[in-house]
Image 1 (tube, rainbow, N blue to C red):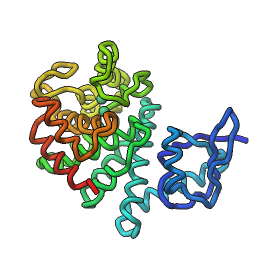
Image 2 (image 1 turned 135 degrees about the vertical axis):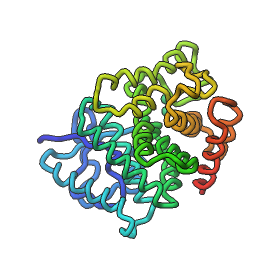
Image 3 (image 1 turned 30 degrees about the horizontal axis):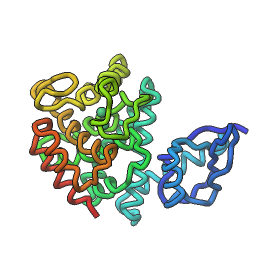
Image 4 (image 1 turned 180 degrees about the vertical axis):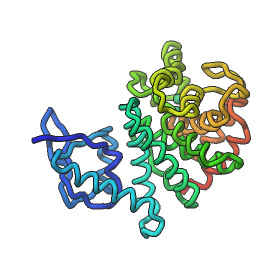
Length: 310
Ligand SMILES: [Fe+2]
Ligand SMILES: [Fe+2]
């Protein structure tokens, strides 16, 4: 039998699957979910908690899987589908996450990149066009602290922030979203354990950590299909407006879109990796990094977070 791997993040929503899904245990394929079942609820949570990111399907069933993906995403973006916003958000969040992983694993693949860029544009429309979309996305927990899920969260916060700031054209917002999605490429394959406060990092660990924006930028610099904005965001997203970031750039030397992503990123670092409750995170950010991010941006994000707390 021939199997191909599929990303667990694409298997979301309440639609029944018309293929069999397997997990690999000790080099053996074990049937996990059969045709006719769906991945909703507990089943998906269990997989996420186990940090299982790939499953397998029979190669012969790949067309069925592709059709499932397409139906899921069409339904999720269809405002008239009548589906619950949380189900739609889950599917769209998973698809964005899968796009990021696809680019991380195959940065040389132009088609994967272009697909992620187009999908980022659709994602912006989804966030801007539904009042509950931002909150539905923000309420999907990143329970396995994945870098790509964090990328989707940062992109979501950055779009909500840019929306409140106003005056940024939609093409720029699309590229900012893609940059935010991919911003932590430098952590992909990293041996550092990221899921703890930066304060607990040793001197050596912190030095290594501070290299990740440049590591990420290096991986794509020679790939001509990446947009400049995306490169800027990857390399500058840990900069601070007071010039105390890894590259010591001051605000006027930073891409304004990277400044927005940096603020959104600092906030989600607290929520996803430092265990700070969502409602406390903006205040914590304000106090702990005075002058590191534009105060006005943190205030806007505090308002965004307020609307997402259920
Ligand atoms: Fe980062
Ligand atoms: Fe990050």
